Image 1 (spheres, rainbow, N blue to C red):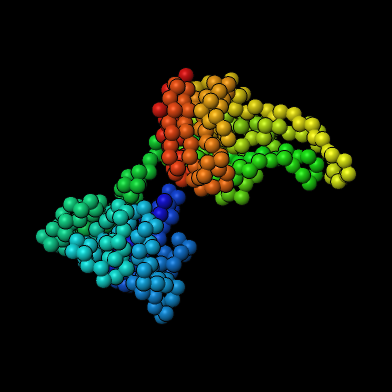
Image 2 (image 1 turned 60 degrees about the vertical axis):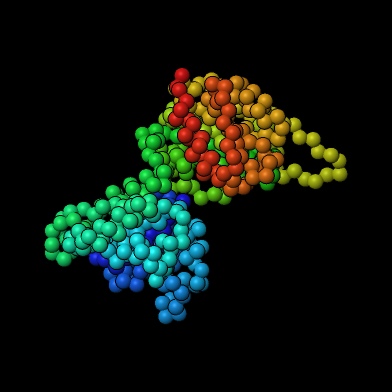
Length: 400
């Protein structure tokens, strides 16, 4: 998810750096936008260093302002369309007034008008400014338009006065953002074990049998679970994917290695999500040296790999067990048969021949087949969205 943080010109502007870090801890992609006045209190370089992105400070690119400025006159539209939420913290009385009256004389004001994303503002100002009828009227207007307001705290202010107007605590603002975005901590205290990616079964020292799995679906489940507060164990076959921050990553290559790793850690888990595309067969014998090309046909003898999902189903106990089925025909029939055969609580099935549901894509189209006989068909959505729907459903499954 992408969040724009608008920083306006108040003494509390430095606290926005803490907010950026807090957003990043929840795996949010942060773009900082600063008003000119804000740059008098904290430099754009500070935010650029934290986010690794240019900080937007001008409506139009200005050579003397360097890389922190926008490069085109329509950048505000691009940012407005990309973000899932706009947070303005601190929000000065001046900024609130401009928002309320539709004044778009800088990038932040224009972004506010251009975005359809939810808006959260955290005001910070002198107590008299906060209590002024004009400020309160502007806030009432913004609230009526659906803007979420995080009221300031009371206390000693930078101006030397005591009263309301101090920027709310970082965690208070962050929790409002997470609430508006729908981010949850409903897996706090739970351990989720996820398998992902393919396995590789060696033919000889330079060749192996594998499949087209990218691991993206399993990594999305791991990412979603850790965002929702779970301790996550990710047993992964070979992939090129970045491991989500905070995940206990266990790399493996073969089906046998995956079986050993899963069985070693399964006792810790409340929920096991077997998203890996484990090879069903492996060479009966691995050649110690490279197989040489010959003129005659080569026959390979294959043997079944261990049935990890089936073994977990027989030893499930109170764990919730979720399997996956990548199918090319008779989706419902095959998924239901697998659900019964493996002793799982849910099978997540997709037709990999369907556009938007195949291997290595960023979207998926799945149906959740449940032990109680129900099935839940999901439309095409991002794999992270699919992951959250799977986790949502897992919370509804009654333990044996």
